[in-house]
Image (tube, rainbow, N blue to C red; front, side, top):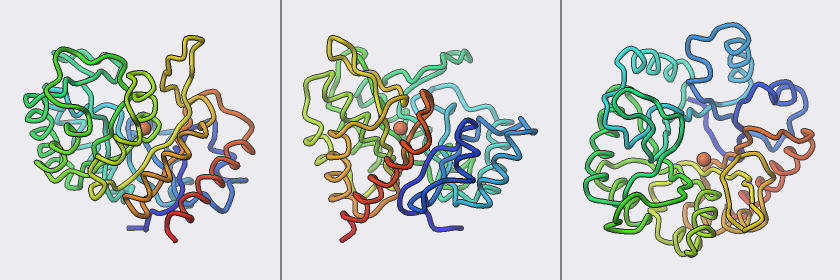
Length: 274
Ligand SMILES: [Fe+2]
């Protein structure tokens, strides 16, 4: 299994050519979402084959929300396990949210209540997925815009409880932490100081949209803001050197701009390692 370290970029069709032909030397790995490739063949199979021959890859799921109560489809789990083995990913991550109810996919990352009941449900699902897939699961904190119902704890405690009870890894999304803190009037630095740093195997950074009223929406379609670069330094000071992924899913700029972001992230990762 290739070593994954430094800065990575999500494999997306509009970025593929640039990724192969003019990526900066500071780009060290790629993140792959299996749902974009399983069963599709053609261009998507060829893109993955070329890109994963060039870069070590880490898997990031889009459809097995860790708060869902419905059992995951067996056929999909079998196909996913084979995909992950071929990819040689060290772990598979998915989101700490729910996205399907009674078999209907809602195609959104919907927030879980921060409650004991949610913790037990997520812990069961993480264990089920680790058994079915044969590798560690990393849970990712999401951007959430309203808390459903009454919270029994805050998000940092929620993450600590889940990861300690099922020995899960954490994919720490620093942009999500910033968006939540700004929207809910909390302190992102306090959140990052309290999440379980020893569980973090990977970090996400991304850009977000800021409305005229100051409300922030996690879009992955803007440049990373200065505050998130600052929070990344804080996160890395606690976690030590873990791989950092630049998420860019839409609003693609000239590749030089992404290269400059990758270089800036690389400088922060290197600085934190010293
Ligand atoms: Fe993320």
